[in-house]
Image (cartoon, rainbow over all chains, first blue to last red):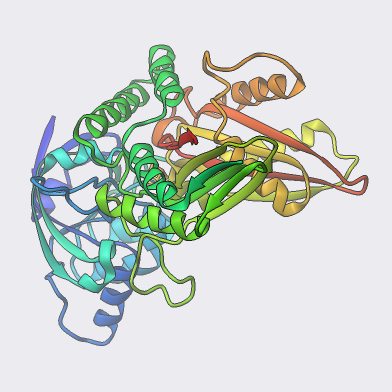
Length: 177
Length: 280
Ligand code: SF4
């Protein structure tokens, strides 16, 4: 199986094709609805971001609190399309990878191609299983948002499926059932 | 008259929410194992295996099955011959808070407009009176990936069963991957608009029609089977990546309605259909 490390390098993103299984190792950042809204406003306002987006991977995830003796609680993906309205700007700021569940809008698929990025799926509704691939969790920003705060996760062989690749191919294709 | 202390209900609700969130329902797990045997699509098989493995890790380690530990919903069936001492609703809300805290479950509840400071409560509580001296409590932590796909349609009273089926199938089609298939589809037919929505959600509490737990009878059972078959032909599959497993079950509840109308509501549950019940 293909192994990948963060931060992502363009020559590696180039190799990724939809439907491919990938194991990701390195640092990723949790980022969901309200944190997206704040990041979006921060970029628009020309202020400094809580972390540098360049070549990074974000994970649409709001984990449960970690039980005693554990690094993280349940931590599966949330619906990616809810972030679509903010994604363009993040890609423009250097973001290279996104992990979530479900489809992306056509506009975002085009932007993924334009900014040479990639969108991954991971096992939806499998937060307990996915917690096994997380080695470290560090709070980064917006702690007042509770589960929607930004955390840096150190993951090891985190299982992913390439869903939108650098060519703008979409694993869901045009089909809408 | 039998008497129950509200304080006891608090602890019971707390335990039920932890149980529901960490131990996948028997019939759902059975159905998942069952479809894994039948599924031919390779990616679908892989995802179904991950879902089953996830349930076993969650149970063994007391972790939440899914990080979206839902909006807490509580269904009460209160015996009219039972006396509850103390403040019942308060006990339930306290139980929710206690359970979510002790179970390391997620605080996902906010004021709808302000959307600040997520917390554990309040639960949505449904109360029905029944004729006995017992209390039945069922909890359903409802994830919002799937709740967001809920639909209600007020049909003409002359609508055909085919039109109703099409509406249900289209709702599943539109839900697609976002709602975490394979689904259990709850359907409420009849009553008023709001009551049909209640029935659709309550239908999720029934053991799923695909499993050995179901007693085969009636037209409704037939309709459930037909819908199950037809939806599974859509090729949505686990995570929307194809395969013959789009729904694990279709559960329908009905109620008489007005001669001028026919409300139909669809409430989808993701594969993480989590409920727990107790009789007191
Ligand atoms: S839809 Fe269900 S399985 Fe999917 S993330 Fe939400 S609660 Fe979890």
